[in-house]
Structures are given as C-alpha cells and as structure tokens.
Length: 105
Image (cartoon, rainbow, N blue to C red; front, side, top):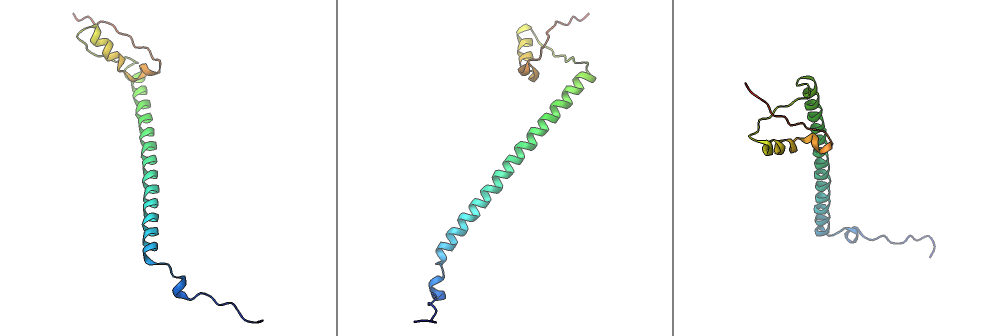
C-alpha cells in the first residue's frame, strides 16, 4: 500500500493525565525552591565570612594603631587573668599574650 501515511495517535491518546502533570509540577517546584534556598544559604555564609574578616582586620588595625598593640583587662587574680588571656582570639593562631600585674599608687 504505497502512498498511505501511517496513522498518528489521536490527541486524546497523547494527552497525559492531569494527576501526573500536577505531581511533576510539585516536584519541579520543590526542586527549584531547594536550589534557591541552597544558594541563599551559601551566599549568607560567604557574606558572613567576609564580614568577620573585615571586622577582624579593623580590630587588628585599631589595636596596632590606636592602642599600640596593648589591651588592658582587669582580673581579680592570676587564674582569672589566664582565663581571660585564653579567650583572646589571636592566641588560637599563635599570637603571644603577655600578662603583667598593674600597680596602682
């Protein structure tokens, strides 16, 4: 039978059921929302990291320029002074903290 075209499926057969479309739409929406939330989270971490670095650099510069690298803390005794010194962030990176008694006259 030459010259005859094969029959195409009717439009009613090719149409997908609505329930499948809704499920796919919900899944797509969920995946897109997760992508956006993931990106926002990474962006917030990046911004926070940069802000921490900025504040750290400002604090370091102020400590050197304004305070001459000296910070004074009051402590009741040597143990409390050592506790305070251990909480200074730069000590975690190898910086030296000197503890001296201050004599008032």
